[in-house]
Image (cartoon, rainbow over all chains, first blue to last red; front, side, top):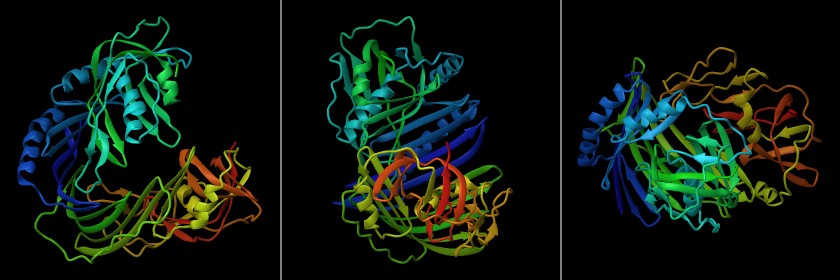
Length: 267
Length: 258
């Protein structure tokens, strides 16, 4: 089995480039042994640099701290922008970056209340992050089943993925798409509105999920069973969430994620 | 100024052996860092054997042995390093072991298997070297620390010399990879011995997940949060651990913060 990659990773701030890293390599796997070298696959390298040129111009024009990463593998070329404003980040792609930065600017002005006794309303597809941890990562670790509501459908396929030629491929989510089918929905009058997530994690030893909410700022720590029980309802089609860079064993990968507007009980 | 590195590593990671050969260069021009693979020029590097994984039931085993040649400003040096990271799970606890050799402390595994639960931190606690080394960077400015001379230069080719750790910035640069911007850091941190250790105090022998430590008190083995309060005594440096740019572990007696 052969894996090849060329990737460029740049950090821009206020139109100035602070860091630029090129990485390329080829890994050949035979059973439980991987031989990895930094040899270049010239076609992937060219594809990577071709995609980076417009992405770089875009990053330079954004008046914020921006990390732009282009990864070219035989499966295709992926470009992601991580834009940080006001201490909060979104992760986007070239076709959505304008809209996602607008969203970030808009929600930075939100001053929602944090109250651990109120239900949570998960906007902008942010429930995808909760389910990414509670369903996606749990599946990666073969966690025992939990009773999720019948109206919830989650598509989070696993495939061997790796960040770099020198990494061991791990079963990782390729994407997470949550949908609702005839879910109940009632928008609570008193609620906490969740807009953007800073990060999260799933611990297979304790079966606990942690989600650090960025706007408004608070942290959820709950078992998967408690999260499943907390799901009250959802409405509409899945909303693309701007940003899941997933890190496991130090390997950072982009996981496109979407979920409908969702309501949970207090968490 | 250009930094160049040629490296060969063999890593055992959860059942897979990864042999990596790569070379790279980095430039710092003004405030910009640029890093890229070094194409064409190869250096002869010693062969490295694959590590033999320890027997046992581990959540995670990562063992790395690597050799490298570095070049910066006309200075050339080489390094040979071993690192082992073990994670041992016993729900809801997880023991974390990070060290610079492949020797497995079977007694530590046996102790962890006896863990009885989680308690409040003892008022006074002796940290074993592998725990004390991990907290040393957080003690800068609180107790007397020093940088101990190293056998190889820092990330910019400058010798790592023994000196006290003061309020100013460290004299050396830490560059864990050619892809990472070097930062000033204290190398081979150690606590200068002081005070009187107490053999009767409960002993924290390993780090656990979530900021806890594995403690022994008489015949009891339990988890407790590590809340570092006043440091009462430090013994002599015993073992080097790969935390940041390196830290020497020692026995350290402290009070738990309330």
